[in-house]
Length: 465
Image 1 (tube, rainbow, N blue to C red):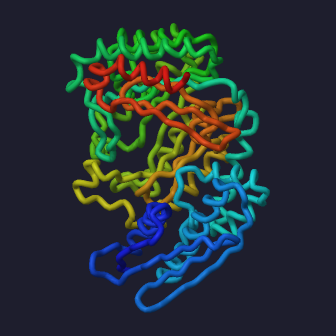
Image 2 (image 1 turned 90 degrees about the vertical axis):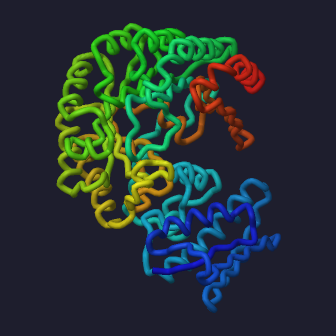
Image 3 (image 1 turned 120 degrees about the horizontal axis):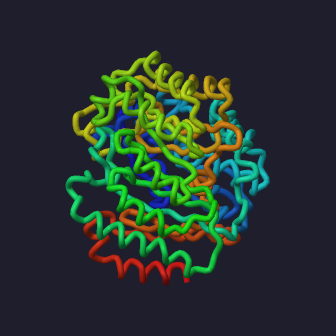
């Protein structure tokens, strides 16, 4: 184990470099009083240089760069410094990370950036960023699956509503989601206010591409309140997703409401098909609840997504494989495989659970899901990475042909503007030609949103003006 104290002379790159240091946990531990890992980058005008000192040893590297565009130049500068630090940590620990020096959320977005900059993305990922062949193959599969969706209809906006309410809090969760019982009295007013915000979309005079209602668990609130929100979208045949992630909240009444309002896609998320694990992670549902909920939507026009999580507490390779096989057997249109991420505020983290102890098992689970789902007729079509994931891996959405979720591609690749409503929602305006994105965040809690909704609506009108 390498112990160090980290310091960087460049405030812009320091956070990214710290993410890289954390990615090497538990092989690298930041500890006060340990030897200093000092990173000193320099922009030389016609290129970049960096010097790294650690425990009496010095590494130096330079890279020529003739980029004129300041955004591209800054991007290249950050990549170079991160890459150099990565290879130092790789040398010190003798450990190669699956995604090499990449710490960002969106590896596929980098792939597209490399293409636009005139590079061969595969060669760059392999030779410059040190990404493993298996992960390069995954990225290339996703890019291929996004053809016909990626950057199509750029003049259309997506629309999102957030219902940050759940029946209980999962042990691994730190989302800004409140338990329904604690906000029950606020929900009727909240539904009215979100519906008003959703209706503001039609004043923008723009076409709509896809609708997504997420959370939390939207189906944790009463059907009559959810109906108010869904009705406000005035759906006319667009892709329309509602997360019903907790199977115990999905009733025939809920399904009827969704169908009557034009919903086309729903999530029913088991996370695992091992009952003992469900109890450990704070899920109120049973395996039978998952099967019952799926039976409610199996013969409807709704596409169904199921979420599974690799590396849940005490699960073996066989346990995870069983969950994947069960989801395939049920025949859902989409299966999303997550790598467990331990958030700072989660119950598991507060209990001291460490999900970084067996990276080899995490990698085996990831590779099993990839190969088995492809064999069963699914293709990976979007991905994102989170901090503190087991094995520093990824979350991947798999789909049967013709059933990819457009909204998921849009939000992960950040290609389309999003009009977002509700507590914790974040609206985006994408200025593609300028290469920039503007964001506007709402109040995070239900009560605060209700109290300030008119102020928030006014801000959003200015934001989209």
